[in-house]
Amino acid sequence: MIKSLVVSILLISSVKGFSQLNDSLGEPLVPVEKIELLKNINFTFDMRMEFQAYKFRGGDNYYNGVQFKNGFTALGISGKLHEKVNFRFRNRFNKGGDVQTLDNLGSNIELAYIDIQVDPSLNLILGKMSPFYGGYEYEFSPLYVLEYNDIYNNALAFVTGAGITYQPWQDHQFGLQVLNSRTMHYEDLYGDIVAENIQEPDWPVAVVGNWRGSFFDQKLQTIYSMSYSNEVKNRGTYFFTLGHKYQNRNLTLMYDFHYSYEEVDTKGIMTAILGDRVAEDVLYVENWLRAEYSFNPKFSGLLTLMTSSAYSDFRTDNEHISRSYGMIPTFYYNPFRTMDIRFFLAYIGRYYDYTNYAVENLGVSDYTKNEIRVGIIAPLLLL
Image (tube, rainbow, N blue to C red):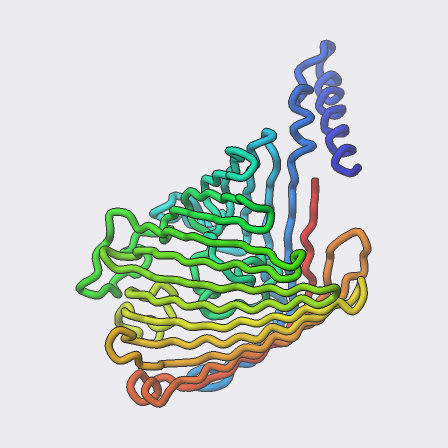
């Protein structure tokens, strides 16, 4: 109803506004034959604003802070251009806009792709998109995630390439992508911190495959994926994810397992610990659990638990370096029946535990991070 009203106003104002300046009727700003196209276009404005109070303790971390923060602010456009052609675009305003040296787009442009239906079971996707990684943590838009676990908090989430999805059966879908493995050339990404045996490949490419399954009348769902990407010449990252979701009435449970073996560190966690060189032969292993419960249409709650372990020189001595823990209880209040605007109260607790080897040889120490956030999440459909 609102969209039809807006389209009508655009049409009438474009015709009348021009005729007031001229005695003869001119061409409208939006041609009449194109006005139907606007009915298939969606404009969205998504925002998460919060009041944040935090405290870091341990090692060199001794910070207190209280502030308002724009956690997520983005404008999106999506729609259907043809019965078999869709597109999606999203510009996030609270990210840097520098044009990346590899894909030639600003990092603030998160999504810019078209989706072409080749036949009822096969789709072709071209442009800048999210990789088909598995797991349900990655399924959530950053709008709804207050804190990712370590891998996805440091992973490159939006890259340029091509993908296909194939759905041979109603409850099973398969996806395959060929993507750039990064958005910048290696020297621009890492600068002078480069190992002697690292060279730029002709094509820093990532290949991602996934499977989405549904069982027991959609009560149990899965998203599994495996991928390989070469960040540098002849050396790459092997990433496996297993995501599970159980949903029954008001309760939703999700569990993800992530395994990322990286011949050259792409997440930067171990590299930051070493400081003077890019880490090599790194392994990250994670668990992520989320439980959601809807008390009634206005009140709901969720609890997220997570762990992440990092290993250095995995191929030689498998040295365990660190393990992090996270806990995020959150309560939502939605006062509106027809709009998904949520007020939330959340606690974010993270604990970073380093092994004796890391403390004695790498100069690190344990630390904690505690936050309280009060805010609003508003995915707004403008047109």
